[in-house]
Length: 294
Image (tube, rainbow, N blue to C red; front, side):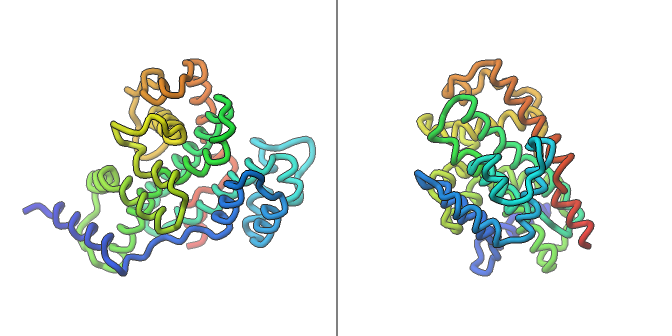
């Protein structure tokens, strides 16, 4: 008998065990997302919550002063950042920076997967947000970045499970890329949905995590269609854990649902490439930070 089914059984048993340690969602990121879901988000709440965290404040100001966002003069306060970038953009950056903490690992085998997943998550978030702006969908814009950022959180959870099993010596078999890819492909949507429910994330985001790969999905769910399209564009460009050169965005069901032109789809790809360049040039990857701390 091959070891692969046995290994899968161990992973699934651990996932469903009552003692499984679930990742903790950053409090600041959650409070800010809850504030942004209100009809009129409070400038003061965003400023107060971000300022509570000195490390986050430093990261936000560094990001706001990067070439991607920079204006005529340097930004030196959270208030200045909100005034220049707007509440939505600041909330997006905070969501990105706080979520980044979950992608760090000491495991050399998993480090590359964590980093590629981090890049994919942020690019998908950026692409989803850009689509709502380009397609003039103001009702979806406040939700877009957050939905794109967390759509693959089930993959992150599964990588954490593997990391914990290896650390605790509950598995002593060599972990192969083939097994890991199969586990992630088959399990991440369902696990992401359950994890987000555990975090008490609003249902519309949980549904995106659960349904973003389904062949048959709710065509009336605009947020889901937006994330699915951005996700497909990332896969076409190889931003993430896999690349699919055969994807034709113009013929995707999501593109038809959103009634998006080929010109805008080409612009989407440029946006994703620009975001990837920004991340590589201006932000330390979780893997780089982890190596420096080790």
